[in-house]
Image (tube, one colour):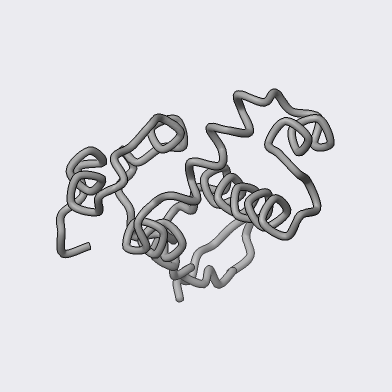
Length: 117
């Protein structure tokens, strides 16, 4: 606490302890992953027969739907890092929507993530 005089009156100023900044969550990335897995489940359960039908129902471009569905092909370690917020800031949605190798080690190398992740 600090005592000061303001306008002829004594006032007490409490020191504000600031909490450390929280890790920044990438809402766009999390929402895209959730949407991709929901769309995949809709296709697998037969709610929609194809990506074309899904895209039309969701009112998105078929190309966009295909790129979004690529997120379901990420390795489990990459998905876990994203959900836990332990990924680097360079890991952006734009980068994940591009074609990636299917092998785990090649995918981690392409995303520049260490194998210990």
